Length: 178
Image 1 (cartoon, rainbow, N blue to C red):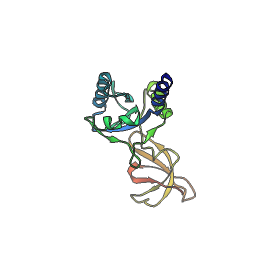
Image 2 (cartoon, one colour):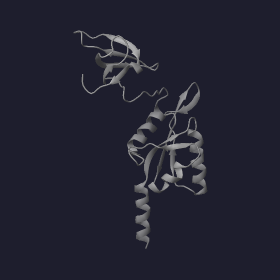
Image 3 (cartoon, one colour):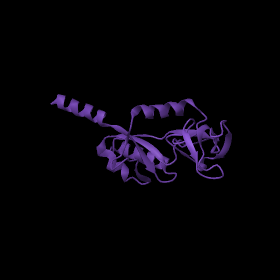
Image 4 (cartoon, helix red, strand yellow):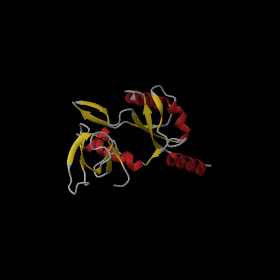
C-alpha cells in the first residue's frame, strides 16, 4: 500500500511541467497573486513564476502579458478560467510545455543582469533578412545589429561590398536563404 502511495507521489512530481500563460493587459501580477491565494487555500497545486526586470527603479514583467506555471495536466482548467487569464500558449490544441532548463535560464538572467531587454526572437543578429519596404525593397542581407529603439543595420552584399544602413525593424523579414 505504501509503495503505491510512493509511486503516486513520484508520478505526480514527474508529471508537473512548466507552461506559459497569456494574461490580459497588465494583469500578470494579479494572476500570480490569485494563484498564490488559491494555493494557500489548497484549491490548486501550482508553482508560479513571473520574471521581472528593473527599469527606472521599478520592476516590470520581462515578458509583458505572460506568466509561467508548473503543474500537472489536471490543473490546466483551474488556471485557464482564473480572472485575468487569456489562455495557455498553444501549438495545436494543447498547451505547450516549456523545458525546465529554459525556466532556469530565465531565473539566472533575472538574478544576474540588471539591464535586460527583449527583442523579437525571429530577428536576431546573424539572421538572413529581406527588405520589404522603401527604395531597397527586395534586397537581401544579414542582420548585423539590433538596438533598443528597434533600428537595425543590414549588410547588403549585392553590390560587391557591404553597406550598413539603419531602418525600422518593421521594414525587414527573416528569410531562409540569401
